[in-house]
Image 1 (tube, rainbow, N blue to C red):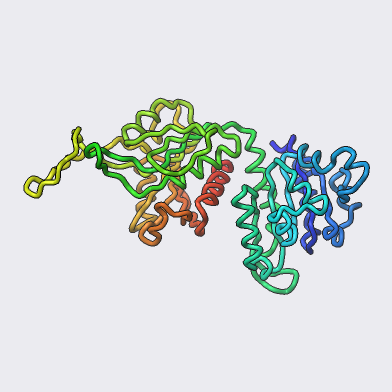
Image 2: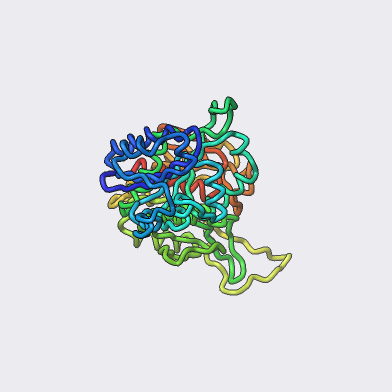
Length: 395
């Protein structure tokens, strides 16, 4: 799988730079071509000779190399590799990247790149927790830069806390799961948003779903090159124009559109679909009348998650549902997993965090038939990325 992958590794200054030598060994062992930029800080900890010996490639150091820049080296390096990995990523190089400063070869390549960029941070715990560093990281994440770690533990400075560069195998698995599998064209179905069940021309039964989580999932898969179909209920969120979006209003509309889709590798049902619809909704606005209150007769809507999970022909390889609960989160999610015959349930407790509906963060428990994985609170974008990585690992 990794045979044709090319990685540009940037080694910045920090005691963890010595680990980059073993990282090169791991990458080469898995048939990945590695080119290296060694910063002035990085060469205080490892030598260009040792890096060249392990990578079996020329080591790049100087932005103003006459030969390299005659060949537009900083542009070429940012184009001929599949991704850029900065490991270790110091607070300094993260700050330079966030500010768009390009005063050496490494930061110039980062600014000139059109490829995915991954940072594996390594620094003192106070540097990591410094609000300026966290602001820089948030800015880079918001602009589609990727971060691997850091881990928590004993640091080289003698202190303990966040700041250890992630385990080398973790780094390897992360970049290969998100980049190598990019070449696999998965057919992804994502449902998102609420449904509106009509009462009359001006009223409906609905819910507070914003569609944000499902949309972020669709965007994360699309970013990796998957063929995404997003079936979307009424919402105000902006959708990238190049994502195939099918807009619907009612649960029956969604069911009808999904039945038309034959080839689905992975289905993620993040939509908050109404369980009931109104029998014979009024064609005219129902007038307020204290004597004759309207009676709404309800009928069960089609169960979309159950339908997808039990398709006799062309069932997706992986069917994932969501469960928003107010009590007995894990118990109810497990029951839903069994009843619907889906593969995973992403459950959240909206009684503990009512801002999940419409908010930007989510707290998820991933329920499978054999495991419960309680995630920390992440942004919905980060939840989407974490879910995509899980899918890719298991598909």
